[in-house]
Amino acid sequence: QVPLVESGGGLVQAGGSLRLSCAASVRTFSYYAMGWFRQAPGKEREFVADIRWTGSITHYADSLKGRFTISGDNAKNTVYLQMNSLKPEDTAVYYCVARRVGGDWDYWGQGTQVTVSS
Image (cartoon, rainbow, N blue to C red; front, top):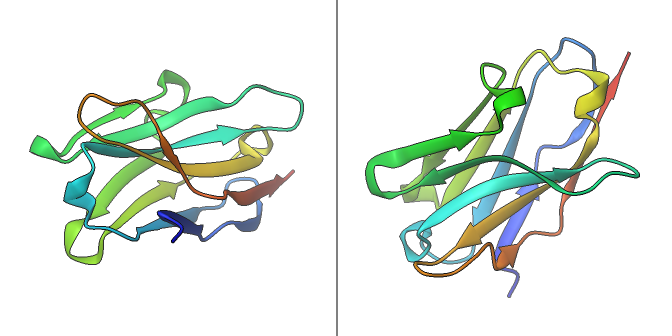
């Protein structure tokens, strides 16, 4: 069973918005935290944002603060990434990730493509 399944990617014009969703096959509280990474063509994978369920604490890559918002719905076992004011440089495959207490980002989704046209 695939632990994490992303959806919501697609093609959008610069300045537009997209909301990515990540559905977990287990209760999200089974994870200590969930988040998003991305990988653009020819570049290394980079951290985007995460949310720790205890206290709903969030973290963002400095370059994305103010444009991206991560949130979660435990009742739906789903994490969201709201992306606003998108730029062509946001074009990448976005991966949903999860970690358990004491672990690393050991659980990855298959990724969803986001393409921002200029």
